[in-house]
Image 1 (cartoon, rainbow, N blue to C red):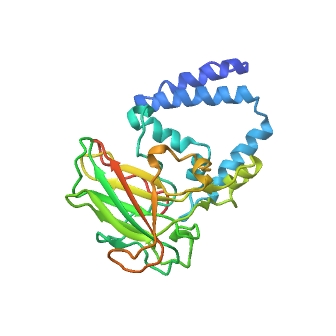
Image 2 (cartoon, one colour):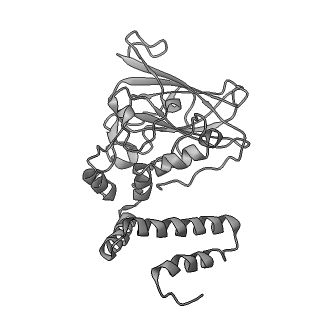
Image 3 (cartoon, rainbow, N blue to C red):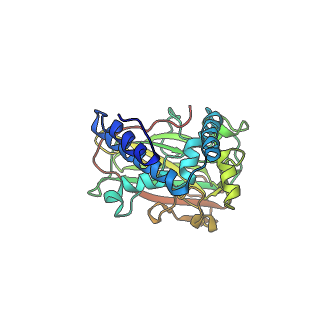
Length: 297
């Protein structure tokens, strides 16, 4: 490699080294990464002080991540990267609607097995009752049997159980297995829209960009079975203006579920006050079933 005498010689020299990478996909990624990073630095004429602050910021984000919070996942969502990766890899490579969505930072392994029709409410959690009926089908519209489905969502105060010491562990979380009808049914409480954490680096970014920190109310769904590509989904059940201004850029038309409000007694549970119902369907496609890396422990 020649000694660098001026800035224009630097990028070709680095790219030549990246091209020595033996693994083809890693070589493709590293060559493109260097090309775009160097172009970015030149495009904005990055100063030495800005570069030092940027490295300091990345270190700070790592320090802000723990077993209850993943700052890099939060930042990727706030920049639209998470949604872009999802859309590019689903829906015929981004050309059609898809019920795939982003995982978010709060999925946990080993959620408690829950019977059909059971409840996700494991500790005192005030809020309107929500009865959910989800159906999972394959590309030929046939119901999928023996599909494992993880469900989780925030409480009516906008916090997931791992963020809130007042909630019992695994509150508003459950694992289900579909029957021959391909359905999952459960009772929970109606979630609300909530703010993402604003005391960290992402919050500082939102503040200087004059952006609100809110996500519309949603229920997370993760479905997996050998022979099918794992479905990662967020079904949005918010009817406020947040549905059009999600801070994480996650809402698409295919992800919006419709709540129905009921005032009559529930057919099985009797008088529960005003209650809501949600029916929604999801399509899984043939592929490799791989569970994602849990963003928190």
